[in-house]
Structure formats: C-alpha cells, structure tokens
Image (tube, rainbow, N blue to C red; front, side, top):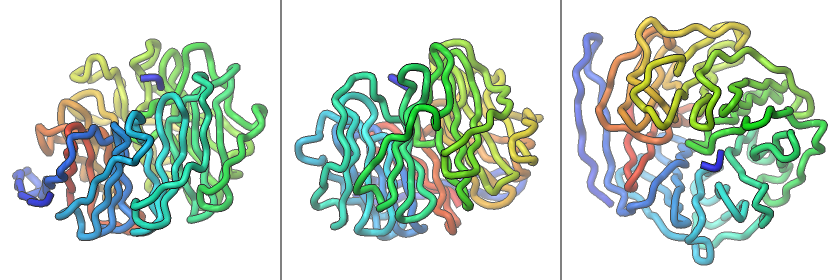
Length: 335
C-alpha cells in the first residue's frame, strides 16, 4: 500500500526459559523492510535508498551497497535463491524488479513500469523458477506478475485471474509478507484498508477463494500487514493500525484449519505488528514498531521478547533462526 561487523548478544529471561536475541551491526542506516534467509548462514536484506546487502556467516558480517541508478527506490521485497542469485522489488514509482547473478556486484533490470498506478507490494516463489509479485489494485483488481524462469522475465496475469478489490482496499508493502507461496501451487494473499480479506489459490494464482478475515479494517492504515503459514493448516496473521501501534484490538489471529476459522490469542502481542514468522511447529515471532513478541504454543498466548521493534521477520525454509530487519539498518536474529 502507498504507504559491520560486530555482533552482540542480549539474553532475555522468560518463565519458560531464556531466549536469545542476537543483534548485528550492518554498516547501513537504510530502513530495511526486506529480509530473506536462504539458510541460517546466507541472508539477504533490502530497503530504502536502493540498498541491498547480504551475509554469508549467519549475520555476523554484512556487505551492503546502494545499487547505482536506483538509489531513489525503496526495495521492500527481496527474494534470494543462494549466495549469488537474488532479486529485489521496489515499492512506489517506478515499479522495478532487479536481478543479480553475482552476489549483488551487478544488477539487471527485469521489469519496469513508470505508470504511477502500479505499486508492487510483495513477492513469493514456489521454487527457484516459479514465482509471483503482487501489486495494488488497478481498475478493481489486484495486479499479479508471474515468472517461470527465476525472475528474468515477467508476465502480467489477466485481470479475471486476479482477486477483486473493494474501493480503498489494497495490500501492504510493509515486510514482503502480504503474499506467501506454499507447496503444490498454494498461494495466500492478504489485504487491508477499507476491507481486510484473505484470498487463497490452490492452482498457482489462476483462481481464488475468499476466506474469512477478522482483522481490524475500515481505514487506510488498518488491515493485515503480514502472515506466516507453517503448513496448509497452521497460520498466523498480524496487523492492526500502523498509526496507533499500541492498539491491541483485532490485530492478531491464528488458525489450525487452513484459515476457515481464526482465533484471537488469549494474550495478544503488544500492538500493531508488521512482521511474523514461524520458527518451528509451536514457536513464532511477531514484530512491529513497539516491540517483538514470541509464542511457544502456536499463537495461543504471546509474551514480550524485546522492547526493540523491527519491520520484518523471516525464517529460512529449513532454518532454526528467525531474522528481523528494521529501521536504521537494524538486523537481529532469534533462535
């Protein structure tokens, strides 16, 4: 929606045992809304002022650069395939997708649209070849761009294959978390604004089914900002009102039946959250400007993990750490 080196450790005690939050020095002051762990050692991050960086040692050392010719853009989505291959997606005008094959030393422009109606929010991939980018609605339909070759070429889906949008409904480019791909062609899409909805596709985004969404909505700053799916049944959605980040009303829910029913936690997070990620089958991390929270029972109850808040939270598919990225170049990890 239109909208370096030194690591230190902070141990936070909890009733169920100590949880470790590791904070890294990155050498950049960019606002980082894109984070993509390929493994627990290979992590890419992206953000404002055309900034993209990577680590090959679990976050202890980072190499950040501004991409020449694109320093005015905010790359809020990054998808990485390995240490050499990655792509970034800008939020705003122009709408741009860049691809690197040499670890970020050089980038090639694979998509560009200068039409101000195009605003790209998130990217998701099923494998190294097949992926999709989500854009805000144009003429009452969300925009979907498909790739079948790892992000080198893109095709815009016909409007009738994209979910409809109400007036004032859009997706949030808060943390590259309003879109998630699952095995077998499953794709989830989350919206906000005047209407908060969840859309499910089981055929790689060709057809869609609306699922109930109890998230706070009704104004441009409200809705579902992020989601995380552990499997086809177990999911968590977070959001709220980013202009009132301490509001704890209808801002976090979990499901155990594939989104057919959503349950509010008995003890919720501390307010608006823009990033959320599973760590394992029971443990998940949620983060936002007012702090970072953890659940160890599948989303039923949450407790404050840190007063430090971040924009995004992601875990590698086979990872054992959740990586967090935020303002002023801040990156952390939880395990």
